[in-house]
Length: 93
Image 1 (cartoon, one colour):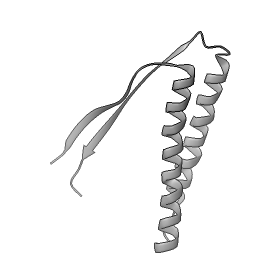
Image 2 (cartoon, one colour):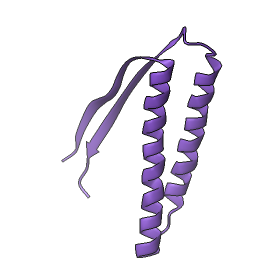
Image 3 (cartoon, rainbow, N blue to C red):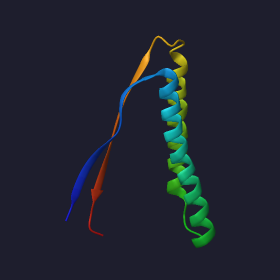
């Protein structure tokens, strides 16, 4: 049984300041999640943490790119339109 569901995570127009806060918080949460998972898996199970390390690098690069985009606006005369949909797929193991 395969099930696909889509959920709207973010959908709106935001000031530069609000967009910065929203995107930074989301990316920081994901980075922190992988850091906690790394520590937990490594300490408790001595498991390979390469996937999380790679994801942290990708998310950190994305965070920098977002910060660069926001810094490039140079003024508050712009708003950012952010649309983010997540897809959740249920698969049999």
